[in-house]
Image (cartoon, rainbow, N blue to C red; front, side, top):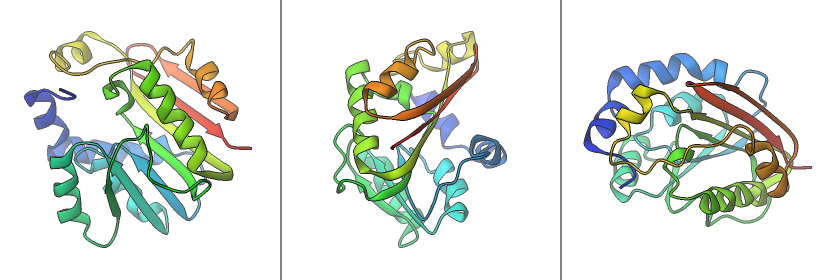
Length: 188
């Protein structure tokens, strides 16, 4: 199960959405998203709402069928919502100007599937496109919130190499222990 009941309640709350909207400018500082953005794993749509005014065209791929229905009902024709996996994206090579994912990579059930997601993100990016990700790092509160969840946390020491092996160049990664990791990678 990717998310337990308490975790789902938190991430679908108005307070969570307000916090995401407040942090989005910082999460995208110095990142040019371009005109056609793919969001992987929008969940309940807080990040999607915050991304929508920042690009001309937004597509979101979500693996959870119930979340897909909620997202389609909310965003109707403003965002293309696709039911699918970030590790097997149903899009042509080189379509997107940017790919983003926010606080969802730790819900991908294995490092191998995370690596497949990285490779797919690179495949669907245009040359010069960017892949921006932000994810949580373990703390006591984080671990308690994730009891019974799928939780495969990114290792800040190995992430740049994993992104490079997926074909990215110019990988930048910063992390705050017990808080979050951010990365930016480019397709040459």
